[in-house]
Image (cartoon, rainbow, N blue to C red):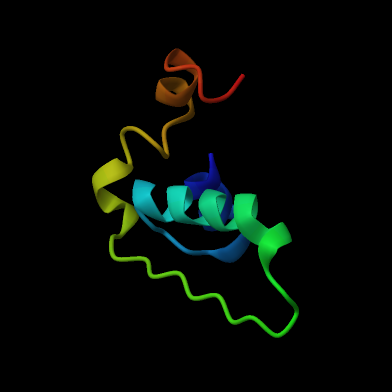
Length: 66
């Protein structure tokens, strides 16, 4: 879901691990101080996931979205 969100809202066509990385950062955000610098590396693009993470029918079948 976060992988799709990155594509739709930020124009970043990334792989599954990018969505997981963003979800992890968001889960930890309450522990960050205003002066902290958070770096997240995205090492994959989304072309390998067009039939899965970027396919709403597949996402529904797997229970990731309604």
